[in-house]
Length: 449
Ligand code: ARG
Image 1 (tube, rainbow, N blue to C red):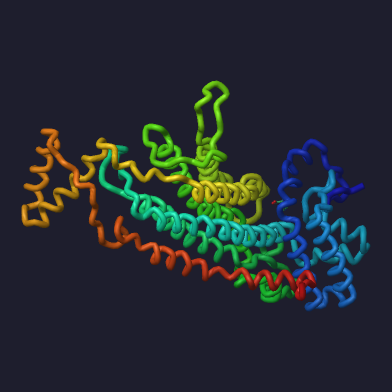
Image 2 (cartoon, protein in one colour):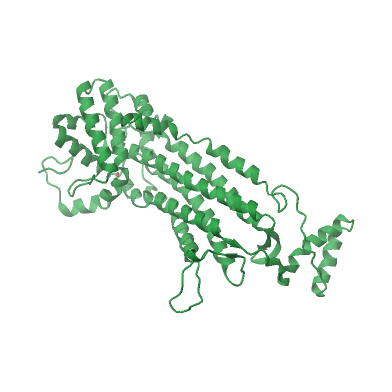
């Protein structure tokens, strides 16, 4: 019995099949519900150009909605011997509806299906990432406000440099996320375009109504050129992966700071006990494993754009099976990122800050610039003031006055957290998730629920 959509007279070699299908069945489970949504839009459009009758459309729509709900309830499976999700859905329709099921593939190719499935998947996943990222952003801002008067040392070259504060430290990571959101928003905009209708990558002689499927799937617009639409495979993933990597880089740095600052030699922060792990040999140990794994997971995510670049490098235009492999590292990366963000938020909201770091005289020299500036404000030329304080330090006579008067924008005394919140919010407001939610509800016949 033929088990491939494309199998005709020659039987497929089993080893070749195993090799080429690889992990695709597992990966395609991420895409299953989107494959059904894509098909719902496609058949609605096929009926409008008379390639399906109204009755066929109604029967197919019901059957696809049923499959969708099976996917939601964990009852959908890509069977052994079935190549991918696209084949599985078509097979189920054919089993249930006979010849009508075989009609849905008119004017379409699996290259087209996987393209649209990926866009729909990415769009939903970005929405979830934005939601958890926003929770973390708010936590960082509120911790920054809460600890804005608690000073800590700032470092350059890991040498004690100048006074900093926990207000600055938390707020810096909030602002970093605001920039990461800007890039994610750009990646979303590129994702939010409909590639469906490119068929195998060169369009179709059927008069497909691509504007219609664009609306039905709640896309902002479409990839116009069908060759370019196919070129979007790999390119979209790489752009999105870069956006993911930015967020990961922000969190990796935060994780490293946190590991370092919680070490006894710093003692700046304390992690809540439930976020530390013990040692099998040293009874006193409370290790920051959660931050260490966060750092490593973030570093791993930062390799994603490079993997995609290497898989797609030097491929000419047009579809190639190489592209399939991108799914293996790309699709699970959203869950990894969301886990990281949720865990980081939990740790950041419970972190305990040492309010007496500067009682330790080893940090006194960092007030030297404050003293130089004070002398300079009183009229002494800066270079002379610098020398005077330098000589005092060398002679062990420097007396630190531990007050700081930083008032300019973004400094210890003027964090500009309100402006940082505005920056984040203005980007957040540009995301329009409602259009696609409404479109999906319509396709699924769930407008009123
Ligand atoms: N599993 C394939 C992929 O991810 C689906 C497209 C198959 N197309 C083909 N021409 N073999 O790329």
